[in-house]
Amino acid sequence: MWESTGPAVKALDALPSVAAAGTLVWAVACPRAAVRQRLSRLARPTTVCAALSLITGLALPKAAFGSGWKLAEIAVLLLLLVAVTRWSPLRELKSALPVTALAVTLWPLPLVTGESFLESIGIATFWLLPVAAAVAAGAYPRRQQLRRRSAVAEARSAQRLQLSRDLHDFVAHDISGIVVQAQAARFVAATDPSHAVLALERIEKAGLSALAAMDRTVQMLHGPAAPATEPLPDVPQLPLLIENFTSAGATEVHLDLPPLVLEALTREAGSAAYRIVVEALTNIRRHAPDAPRATVALTPTASTVEIRVTNDRGGRSGPARRRVSRGGLGLPALTEHAEALGGTLSAGPHGNGGWQLIAVLPAALPKETS
Image (cartoon, rainbow, N blue to C red):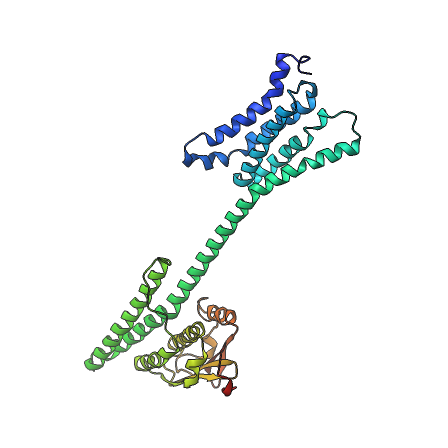
C-alpha cells in the first residue's frame, strides 16, 4: 500500500495530521497569558482539521501511512476536541463537534474490508466512546466554571439585596426622623428656641445613627476580609427605638414586649423582628405623622411570635393613601424575608382609618410554656 502511492498522495494523506498538530502547537506555544485566548479560538481550526481528516480518510483509503499514523492523528483531534469543548463559545462548539465526531468514528472503516454493514456500524459506534470521553473531559470543568460564576452572581445579588434592605430599613428610618425634627424646629424656632435646640439635638442623634448604618453597609462591601462590625439591631433594642420614635414626633408609641420573646427568637428572627418594627414605624411617620397613638406588641405562642403594630388615624392622611408596595423595598422585601424564615407578614387598614401590620415568625419556646 505504501509503495503504490506517489509523493503527492502521501502529502495529501499527511496534511490532516500536520494541520492538527500545528493547530495544537499554535494554541500552547505562546505566552501563558495568551494561552486561554488562543484556546477559545480553536473551534474553526479544529473543524477544518477534522474535515481534512474525514475527506482524506474516505477519498484516499489506499494512501494511508498505516493505522499507527492515523491513530496519532485521531489522538490529536481528540485533544483539540477537549480544548474546544472546554474553552470555545457554544455557537462555535456546535459546528466543530459533529465534524470532529464523524472524523474520529469513521476513520477505521476504509482500513477494514469484507465487513458487513452491521459490523461497520459497530466499529463506528465503538469509536464514539473516545469522542464522548473527550467531550466529557472538556465539559466538566466548563460546567464547574459556570456553576462558580452563577454562585458568585447569586452571592452578589443577595448582597445587593441585603444592602438595599439595610439602607431602606435603617437609614430611611433615621432620615425620616431628621425630616420630622427639622420641620418641627422650623415652626418653633421663632417662638420657642429651647424646643428648637432639642430638635437639633435629636437631628444630630438621628444623623449619627444614619452614619453608623452607612458605615455598616460600606463595611459589608469589603467582603469577609473586612474588620468585624457591630451586629445588626435585635429585639432588645426595641425599647430604645420606641423611646426615640416617641420623643421625635407627635405619636405616642406603647411597647408590649414580654421577657419570654427575648429567649424565643433566634438571632436572625430577632433581627427580622426589629426590621419589621422599624418599617412599620417609618410608615407611620411618613403616612400618619400626627397619629396620636400607636402600639407595638410582640406576643409569644406555642411555636411562634406574633408582631402586631397598629396606629390610629392621622389628621392629615387616610388609609386610602397607604399602599403596601410603596417604594418596592419596604414591606414586600420584609414579607419575602419573613417567608424565608418560615413566617408570614401582612398589612392593611385597621379600625377607624388606622393601619395595622401583623407578622408571625417561628420561635423556640420552652416546653413548659406551650
